[in-house]
Image (cartoon, rainbow, N blue to C red; front, side, top):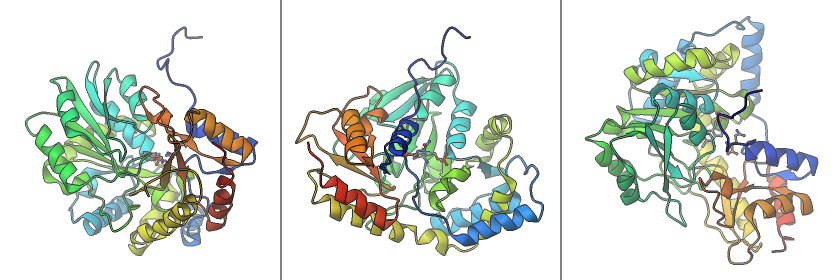
Amino acid sequence: MPSSSKLPHVGTTIFTVMSKLASDSKAINLSQGFPGFGCDPVLLDLVNHYMRAGFNQYAPMGGVPLLRERIAEKTKLVYGVDLNSESEVTVVSGATEALYAAVTAVVKQDDEVILLDPAYDSYAPAVELSGGIPVFVPLEMPDFSVNWERVKSAISDKTRLIMVNTPHNPSGYVWTRQDLDTLADLIQDTNILIVSDEVYEHITFDGRVHHSLLTHPALRERTFICGSFGKTFHVTGWKIGYCIAPPKLTEEFRKIHQFLTFSTATPLQYALADYLSDAGRYLTLPHFYQKKRDLFCDGLKNTPFQFTPAQGSFFQMVSYAHLSDESDYGLSVRLTKEIGVASIPISVFFSDGSDRKILRFCFAKDNSELHLALDRLLKVKL
Ligand code: PMP
Ligand code: GLN
């Protein structure tokens, strides 16, 4: 047995822990972020079709060319940006792989990487496994916006990378155009690269626009964009996504990708290529999820929790800081066991585990399940 761990502070992810507890307690699982409903049967038929038609061997390392073209077409349609699908788009086995491969491709021993705190839980371990040093910059409460003065003072001549996530998990904060401009100004005379996690790109509310870093020319030339079909087409278990980056960065990215997974499930790639030909399938997503957010938030008004409706993502945060000192982890476990609704305590996303008395609920569920969860949340005792 090895005597020392490479990740001594890392345990099992909270998503695994809470989903298991939800299952053991027969609770409604609003913890781990995954849709509670199925995908479009058309997509299932397409996968079935391509499997039976014999598309079952390794896909090209960078991805099936037609899927890469379709990703480029989607990018043109949604963001007005032209891509070379050969040299700038790589299909990967989920955004988790894209994030890991991008970090591994560029971070060397003792490089500093700026992480906006709280951050999605896979970022810091990826940085540390490459010998990098995470430098945490706290987001502003209560909306989790970026404090650019703090980012500026965190930048040093050792900064190699800044990791960005919009719409943000867990808060749902959506970056503004001003955020992009400020970031571009801050790094213009540096060699700093960006990893931009945009897995919720199609889930924004109240008419908000998702400003992909691709749409900012100065940022685009130094950014890896990470996307996920799991989120967009309700198939998180398929683990398929993509990375968009300029040719030189894509070259480095693929050096890692080819030894991490080599390629991604072939029939899924062909099926998604076909499915993407109808843009309505992703352009309707904001409306679809806004109805769920609104339903969930309407019900939350009758509970003791305080909240501001999420700007994006399929998560809603709620605060109970005005009512109780109970730890967010303790409350999350108690609610799962006692009333049968599982959530995520957001302390797990903070680098220092700080407890703001906030829980995160996933509202990507059937309306009937959301109603049932809301009925149960009425009984919360704090
Ligand atoms: N980034 C964020 C912010 C996420 O919430 C998730 C969870 N889906 C991922 C990355 C991972 O995406 P995937 O399931 O495609 O690996
Ligand atoms: N992204 C999902 C969430 O935030 C979880 C994905 C996972 O379990 N790895 O809940």
